[in-house]
Image (cartoon, rainbow, N blue to C red; front, side, top):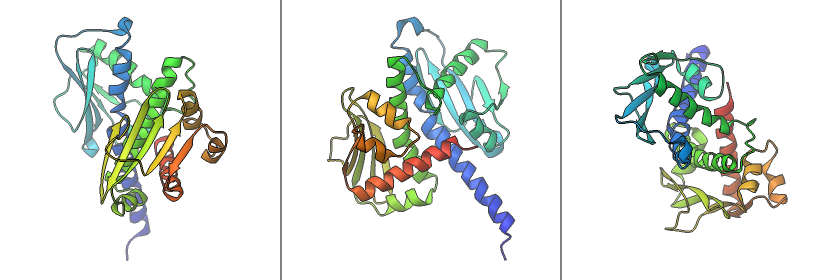
Length: 270
């Protein structure tokens, strides 16, 4: 007979693995968007001659991702490798709590030798606070950035739920013919999409043009998107208020909305 305690521990471990996957593969890549936004501001431009790499992960769980800095750009790559600076967490629980906004400190390697890089990374990571529910950016540019990050996170995060073994998401993708789910902010031209086809998923930014969306969430502008995406109340109230229009299958609109809610809960727990 299987020990229920062992089953519970195994289930908890799988859950933490799923959370870590979403954080490293869906949340951390958002820093590419943050960096690109920052460096459109000439006052924030800095130059460096040699590329530098920062690794964030857990040696105990053999999980890591790398931030690769070259001049004014940053690229995110998965997996471990040579790094100028390392943020190492003793377990996945601590890594996940760090990304969900808890006061968790990693073991730092290389920080004393590269203080400017450390400051640069910490400032960049602090931008992810825009994803937190209690973050209310007053600056119009920050509100646009937050809406971009949230929409990109939705499409990437749902894809990583599938890759990470989330039962409901895997079932939906496995049974899906070629279908596209689209999120669009009309006035500012911001968009993100998720494509499912017989067990496979792809994501991207902007409008998917190869076929019409099966389900589409349409926001008239950034302010409407900001209100809906940061609201704690049910989406149905926002539909009624005209802040978001849903087009396509009502059944699958509900399914995707529920998965979006589960993704949100996964990221904020702990």
